[in-house]
Length: 416
Image (cartoon, rainbow, N blue to C red; front, side, top):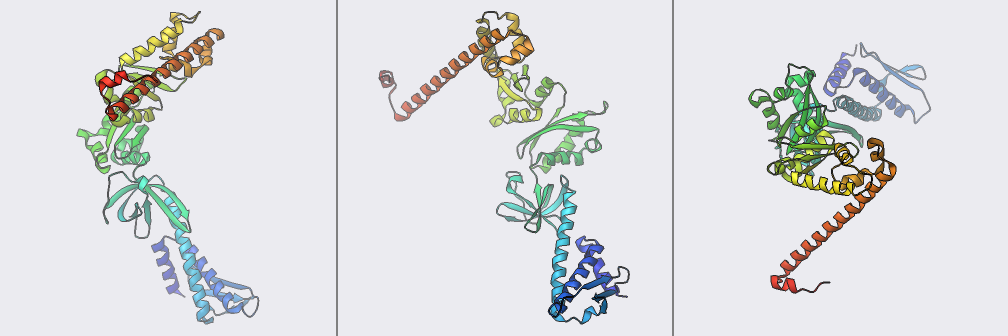
């Protein structure tokens, strides 16, 4: 009995996470290569090698005649060694790929290693490394060698005979996995994350819904005195997280998504996939957010293109549309109300919607609908031209000021 061989196979299989059967098959293939190396120079022959899985006994045959594989010499032994090394590496690569391909989307704990061209190499375990590209790292974070790091397995690829495990801390699913770890109700499916929008390192909006009337979705995610959400925020280096209540009503969802801003009115146009939201002057900057972040995340969270207007801007747009529509013969005040109910609150909306929705949704005569849209197009062009002229005047004024032209001289400049 060759118990030494059995023990070696067991150790390699355990250390490299490779099946013992694969290793035995690799050993047999390596010995066949060695025998062919030894006999091949002399003649064409058929080599068979088998290893008893229980005893480790090796049986080798050349053209049906048993041979002693141990007497082939040093060069065939080197051939067997090289073949075995290559096959074990291939088996190990396949094992790593199979294991981690199944774990895509899972959160893992590793230790940061080195930086390679901006990419962070993470030690997942003793035999496996992952790579976190710069695009998948949270901006502003730096990781020191040996530091514990939590990340998500984003993708697993085979590149140039190597398994490349791509890790991420910026993917929206990373937030979902963190909620599953910190909030038991999410992991159990009692609370569902219906939608999520994220700008990694800055802010995330999460819309949650409860399948149990006794469980408050928002309260459960926040935790007692904010304990649960604080753990997630700490893991994300202080990234702000807004948890909002999901609603099947688009208007309610949009209002929730724009929090902490308070919304006065919402007009939804299904034809354009657009929601016009009216907020008071004091809520405008809060609704838009820093660099437009709040409204941008709310739009991605809800799936609606969101326009933020003040009451003055909203009323001006409606008045322009009313004047435009009522100037057409056959248009009534009720038609204006129907247009507003359809979410069309400006001549620009009217121009973009076109003729067909007016005919199909509001039952307007085709001829009247065409006239209304034509008038809206003319008004939209006039408004665009007026806006362009104002912009040109503003640029000219800035150029004159930068050139140091006195205000008195400006007035006397000849018109071009």
